[in-house]
Image (tube, rainbow, N blue to C red; front, side, top):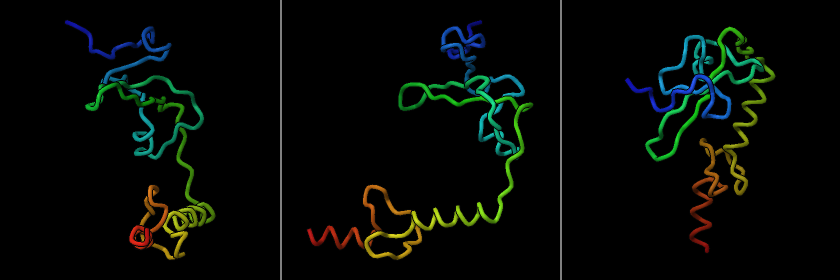
Length: 124
């Protein structure tokens, strides 16, 4: 029986980092997203291993794995953090040309709301 393509638990082929194929990581190792779903965060620990899989667009994709035993609970959202997050999101929705809240995050390639981008394109 042959080993899966990205099977390297010793880390010899991948720079000293233990590497496992998709869905074959040992128990107790989780990605950031999996930790977050459990109400946890990495909490400053180093990456314990990685999961590697082949992308449909060519090349390889990686996800870092962390030990659940060293994970810490997610910090609660305080009123000050909620206010800062709302302020940052409002800035991403506010058009610099007209100053209105567009109700959506402004496209980075335009830099303005769609209405202002349309009038600029017509004027040019």
